[in-house]
Length: 88
Image 1 (cartoon, rainbow, N blue to C red):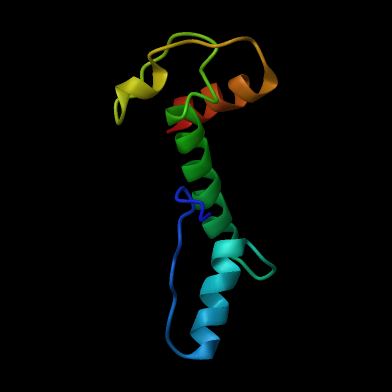
Image 2 (cartoon, one colour; image 1 turned 180 degrees about the vertical axis):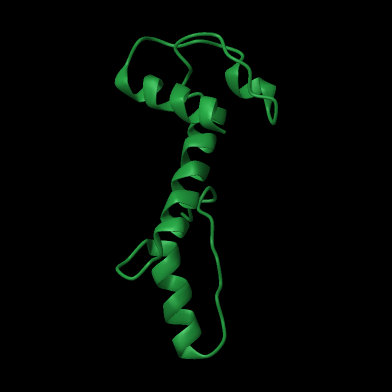
């Protein structure tokens, strides 16, 4: 039975461009650091939206206030998330 929650991305074009796009997506060697940083920011945002990460104290996040509606337990992951929210 197919997994309907799996996302698919089709990349087409010259083989050289497809290989470069695949390296960026997979985070392989040769990926610029700014691309890695952008991907990690997206992952933190999605983890917060999914309820996997919370801030440890109430804070304000103007771009998406629902992201910081609740506070979570005092864990290292939640502290990192709080710092990311404060920097954004």
